[in-house]
Image 1 (cartoon, helix red, strand yellow):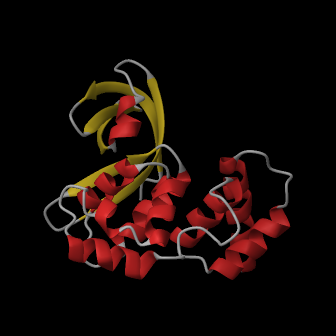
Image 2 (image 1 turned 90 degrees about the horizontal axis):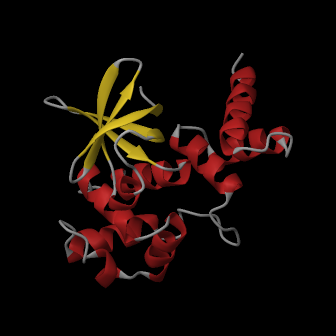
Length: 188
């Protein structure tokens, strides 16, 4: 599974970029905001979701772990595929999309291409209150917690590991790696 990719942007299309890493060019589908921040010839570092089907293998890229986690939660909703989930991410930041879903704003969600009223209602029903913990914003702690949960760890198990990591690690990546090491030690 490909979780991150770092390399040089060699091509930009309408909804994708080609990232060259270690001599290979990877086609990565991106939302409008992330694609807009890239330019050909510049360096890029993305969190990724590898989507496998019988007839395709696609890579979707995100500027943060929080976006990746939201994408994963959207994919878990029946009827939401990767392209639709990517279009939903164009509605705003993770926190803004969480607010839309918590408010039950079906009208705004149904403005997204390929999202009808029924699908928007299903998204609200299945994800309302489940994206960001009550009383907390979408900060680094939530980003790491969301990534751990998205990787299959239980919420309580992930919170415990993060509490053991504490504030010694400053970056999101360092906190995630430390939490994964801690969780790995518990499996022995």
